[in-house]
Image 1 (cartoon, one colour):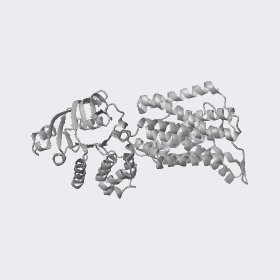
Image 2 (cartoon, rainbow over the protein chains, first blue to last red):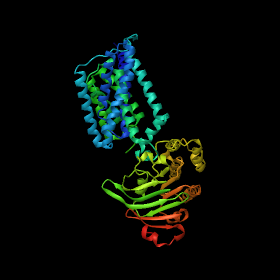
Image 3 (tube, chains in turn yellow, green):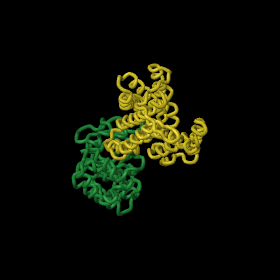
Image 4 (tube, rainbow over the protein chains, first blue to last red):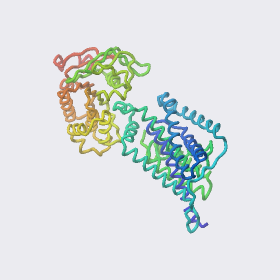
Amino acid sequence: MSFGPFLLLALLEGTVMAAVLALTAVGLSLVFGVMRVVNVAHGEFFMVGAVLAWFVTTYLPFPPALSWLVALIIAPLIVAAIAALADTLILKRLTYDPEATIVATIGILYMLQQAVLTLYGPDARPVPAPFEWRIQTPWFGYSGYKLFVVAASGAILTAVWLFMTRSRAGLVMRATQVDRDIARAFGINVDRVYAGTFALGAGLAAVAAVLIVPIQQAHYLMGHDPLLLSFVVVIIGGLGSIRGTLVAALVIGLSDGVISMFFSPTLAKILATLLVAMVLVFRPQGLFGAKA
Amino acid sequence: MLRIDGITAGYGAVTVLRDLSFQAAPGQVTCIMGRNGAGKSTLMKAIMGLVPVQSGQILLNGQPIHTLPAHQIPKRGIAYVPQGRRLFGPLTVAENIEIGLMARNTGPDRREFVLTLFPRLRERLDQVASTLSGGEQQMLAIARALCLDPAVLLLDEPTEGLQPSMIGLIRDVVLRLRDAGLATVLVEQRVDAVLRMADRVAFMAHGRVEAEVQRAELAPESSLFQRFVGV
C-alpha cells in the first residue's frame, strides 16, 4: 500500500480511538470538574462496562445486533448504579477530600478488578459486533462498525454537551462546579449532584467500553490503558474542561493512530506521555483549563 | 421572624460563635457590626447551614432550621448575599438568575421583578458574570438572592469596594425591600451606611452580640462605633 492510503487508514484508526477516548475522558473530566475528585477507578468502570456487555450478549437469546443494543443500554446503567453506590458509601463519607478520595478510588479500582476476576475469570473474551459490513475503498476495505463507533460517539458527546449547556440539571452541575457552598445556599442538593455526576462519568466510560468491546475483547485488565490515556487527555485539555478534553482526545487519538501505524504503539504512548510532561511544565492548567 | 437562641458554632475544633443570641424582624434592617474576626460572616454562614451549629437553635417563624441540611434552608425563605459576591463566575447573568429562581421554583414574575429592580442586568443577560464590573456583580448577587422571594435576606458587606453611586443604589434597594416587609440582616463596616439603613444595630465581639441598640439611639460619634469597630 502506498503512503497516501496508508495515511488515510492510520487517520481512520486514529479517529476511532479519538472518539472512544473522548467519551471515556469526558467522564473523567466531568467528575474532576464538578467534584474535584481524581477518579483512579475510572478505567475499571470502563472494564466493567465491557464485561457486562459480554455477559449480556452471551446470555441473552437475541440476535447479535439486538443483544448488543440491550448491552449498550443496560451496561452503562448498571455501571452508573455501582458508581452512585460507591459515591454514597465511600466518597461522601470522606467529604470528597481530594487526597483521601484518590486513595479511596484506588481501593474501588482493586475491588472492581478482583470482583470481575472472580466472577468472570482471567480470559479475554470476544463480543460479536452488532453488524458486519465493510466499506470498500480503492485501496483497502474498512469496518463499517468502526465508522459507526465514531458516529455514535459523536452523537453521545453532542448529547452530553447539550445536557451540560441547555438543561437545568447541567446548569445545576456547572453551578456546583464553581462553588459548592453557594450552590447549597441556593437550594442545590450537592450530595445528589455529586452522586449523579459520578454515575454519569462512570456511565460514559461504560458506553465507550460497550462501543469498543467488539473491536478489542473484554478482559479484566483492560481498564489500564483507557485510564492512562484519559488522564493524558484531561491533563493536556485542562482538568474539568469538556472542550479541552475533546480537542486533546482528537490530538492524542489521531497522533496515536498515525504513530502506531507508521512506527509503533509504544512510541505513540511515549510521545503522549512526553506531551503531558511538557504541558505540566509549561502550561500546568492544560490547553483550555482555568488557572488555579 | 428569624430568631437565634444561644448558638455556638465554628469550623471543626475552632469555635467562632459563642452562645450568640439575636433576632431579625420583618420590615426591619438589622445591621451587624464588629471588627474583623468578630464572627459576623460566620453567623451568616451558620444561619445558612454552611457552618455547623454545635448548640443552641435557629428558628424561622418558630420552626427550627439549624437541624435542616443546608440546601433546605433557602427553600424555607432565607436568601444569602455572601461577602465578596461569590457569583457563579463562568455562568451568564441569566444563568445566575435562573439558579436563584430554581431554589424555590419562583417564576417569570420574580425574574421580571429583579430585572426591573436592576435594569442594567437586563442589558447584560448573556454576559458571563465574572466579566461584569464590581457594582454590576453586586447587583447580580442581590438579584440572584431576591429571586427566591425570601422572607429573610442576609447581606454580608454588600457595599465593600463599591463606588458611592453604587452604594447609594444598593441602599435604596435595601430600604425599598424593608418597606415591602422583608427582614434584612446586614453585615456592614461603614458607619454612614449603617446610620442610613439600619433600624437596629447589633455589635459583635469575640463571637457574641455584646450590644444591641435602636438606630434612633445611635449618633455618628457614638462610643459604640469606637469600641466595636474602631472608628
